[in-house]
Length: 393
Image (cartoon, rainbow, N blue to C red; front, side):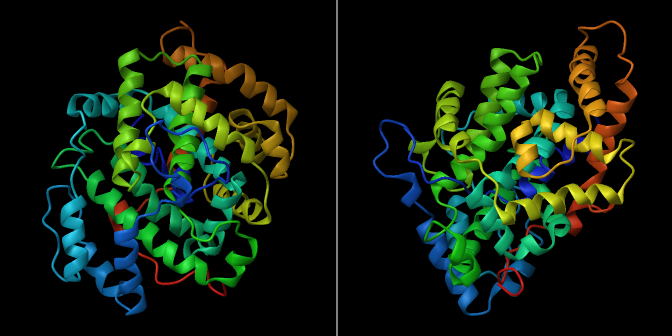
């Protein structure tokens, strides 16, 4: 697919924010000295609380707008203590492997069609049935304007999957640090919302454990589905894809001892802390309706029943039932027979294009357009720090 599709590969998945999910303590790395559910981001949390409490968010957002590339100097206009903190974290970890990161970028380019579908209709909609995540997103500022939130936050996914994402000319290191600032702001703001407190089972959102669970709904889920769909991947490709995510969640403030070192470890963690907690909530149902409703704004070339059945195909009928997605059994049959053939043809494993090839191709490309903020450049909707919660919350 084109750069357009790759720019949107994570848009819906990240539209809901990298906020977290679980109340079950997993078997993290055996060397872990702390409980990830009680680890947040103390230093930047303190700094952002100060910015929020003194009304400094507009000035910080203005300053950060010009800070884009990894090699860009920190902008002027930031509070001195915040600038010093950013100076200290705005770099790759010592263990980052540039060869693996470049291979991951090439893998993203080669498999962008499947990545977009899985991140968008898989991870994005899955996040609406992760109770903590759905409630945190719904009651935060972006929950009231999901298209705007998507337009601002898909930058994370594009910057992560770009060819030079981690190079000086790339943008992901800066994007990750801006996202980290947003997380710190949300941790300060949400506990002030009586609506969020009334439904939350946590004192402060977005712990290290929460971010890791969201990683499982993104990277681990996508890796597993690619294997289930028999998408060809070399061992080196799989390792590089994992390494990309390891670096990404490190840059989001997750302690290294909590980060899974293999896909097997990631699958084990996911089975412990993600799968058992999936459940519907009123907030999640509304978010899913909002996200799927955005499709009404463009011509997908398919019916809403087809879209609903694709969500069911990627996730499960149980999730589809939780979200109240009406059935379309003809579309379900077409997807379950046609999509595997579509993959096989694209991967050179089938000599003749399946009858539904054009339909699937048009569907994927139309979805890619959906979260491009009606065709505008993503630089026009930068990641910004919220100054409050959902209006009325």
